[in-house]
Image 1 (cartoon, helix red, strand yellow):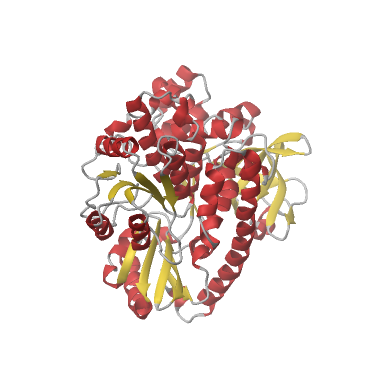
Image 2: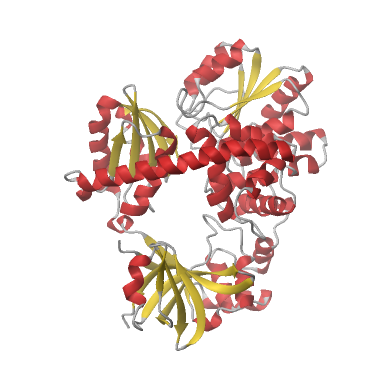
Length: 568
């Protein structure tokens, strides 16, 4: 598949030169910073040296005072409380934070994660009925609830109060809960809008601690869980999230909670764990619990205080993650074959498919794999008892949540973000939904959005790539949406020695420019580019730079994003 290359806009040279002089970095580094809005000494200081004091006052969130007062009343009167959360990483980490904090103040509290298959996403009637039958009078909902208007009304009729802590987009009318903490509320003036669900849970315990005069250490023991939620939910990595992720990673590397330590130690050993290690290592293990069976297994690991017990509990997550990988591979293969063999589907601008035996727990992963392969807005449905449960994933610059909204007449329930959503429809409405969704995509999507894109920060010569340069790049972490790992573009490159393919998929080569400045290069899943770099052919490349630690030897390496034959 062709990949478009796009250069980021070149910033004002005077601003770049001024910043370069003020913070004593090269103009290349200064250019990258200015591109990200870091264009003054003070902004650079805050960016490179985040402080916990940069976190906003939690009481700036609308309804935080109402939430505090209601929980304080429940704690004082020893009311039965429930912490309710979604079954993904963001939801389970949020539940673990809020439950672990309040159980020390009110032992009569329990946590509840809905069953993905019996209850579906978000607040469920089954969960509310369980609370009522067990005398629970206050539910704190995390990472869900902002569109559960009717169910909150039902809880109100039963005398159960709801505090909703959510970061998803509200509908036109918000639920009649006792308090709703969501910076995306139209009437909320909180300075930062992109907190994760666990981030909002953290702000809740931060507010309670602040009001009660508890020491800051009481809440900072949960900040590594916040970092896991930020990484896994792929939320914005600027502003407050960047501060939370920075200190969360610091704790994860220096003094992780027992549960996270156990999850780290069953994976590859590393000197320092990064956001990428969470996304590809820790997060999938936590997610696997809810995808395959019961997400409460993940919470049990994350709230455990004793390491030996946490290590034993982690075995369950590892087993389920192995099972998840097998299902993911099988269903993805089946889905790809379906798209390639169905008449007319390859000409469509969207992919909407269903499978009767497909496991609901992995269809989100399958949808992401389909986007990677075909680069079209994709919805993958699993069919069960006349209903279809779907996961939607999008391509750059196309709002799949809005597209589903336009097909609402066929949709029973949905929620999500611009690039990812979940929904359910009746099986008999599949064809009608599919056709209307395709028509919306055809109407709204730009042709450029149907090709994957590499957006690089700047052109650079290999000569500029030094250990000091890489050290400054590393100091720009943590990386994520809004603060991505810098990508560089270099021209007129050659592979010096015979390039080769590893494991039938990955391209391994040594790269030089002007017969100097030799660097190892690796292109994961880029074996098809072998002819481009063979026989002394000249090529251009987009890449990131990283350290490769192999057998105790640490070398700077180019991690390739794409290659193209040199065109002059």
